[in-house]
Structure formats: C-alpha cells, structure tokens
Image 1 (cartoon, rainbow, N blue to C red):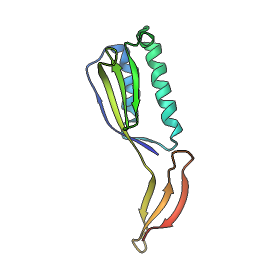
Image 2 (cartoon, rainbow, N blue to C red):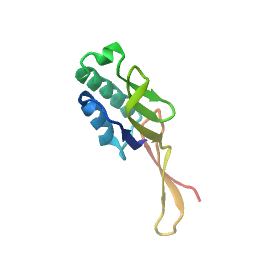
Image 3 (cartoon, one colour):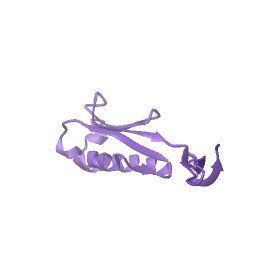
Image 4 (tube, rainbow, N blue to C red):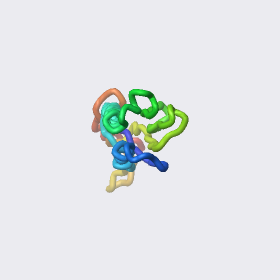
Length: 123
C-alpha cells in the first residue's frame, strides 16, 4: 500500500495547475496496489506534456520520482521544483481484537502482488 503525505507547492506558472492539483488530490490518501503509483506518475507526465507547451519535451519541466518516497514536479531544468509529495510504503495492516485486546495482522501489502488478508495473531 502506498500512502501519500506532506504535499507542498510553491508559486508556479498556471500551466502547472492541473499536475499540481493531481498531487494535492492524493495527499493524505493511498493506493492499495503498488502498480497504481506507476500509473499516477505516468499520468502526471502526460498532463505536463499536454499543458506544458513543449516545455516537457525540451526538459524545462519534468517529474522526478526517487526511491526515498518523494515525487517532485521539477522546473528550471531540474534546478528547482514547483511541488512535491512524499509517500510511504505500508507492509502490514495491524489491529487489536476487541474482545481480548490482542494485536493481530489483518492485511499484508506486498509490493509485487495484491494485498492479502492474513488474520495472523502477533501476541
């Protein structure tokens, strides 16, 4: 599972509004499937190409995605950014059983597969 947080944007030209709006929309939300993150980044790039008036193709603007859990909309040929959003990858979903307050794992979120219901006691 991918959970987005810590969205931030700077003053920017209006042609970036739609892409920045996409990032703001997913803030404090999540994707169940890790493959959805790839689609989201692909769609961000597509919007920048459509709205950028050739700037994306020239390399003036772009999308940077690093393994540290951050996506940036880059400007000024990667010298600055207009917006960023951070994300974390959740591995497990935990809960307490209400009748005995024992901790258990109810979901597993593997990066290479769909989430799985586990219902595994941890205590």
